[in-house]
Length: 66
Image (cartoon, rainbow, N blue to C red; front, side, top):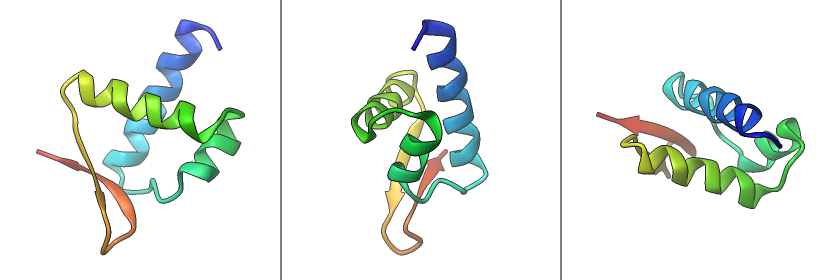
């Protein structure tokens, strides 16, 4: 995966979180054709960029805190 592909996937991941549509890391990993660990690294990179991303146990999805 090149740097631009990774950034595009991170942006799409952020879009899914903003729309509250990120429920399963496994599904995203399958869609991106990568491992779950890679998706977790993408989430970590987004957090390092300043986004406050949390997992809501009640809704069973990832959300963006403001």
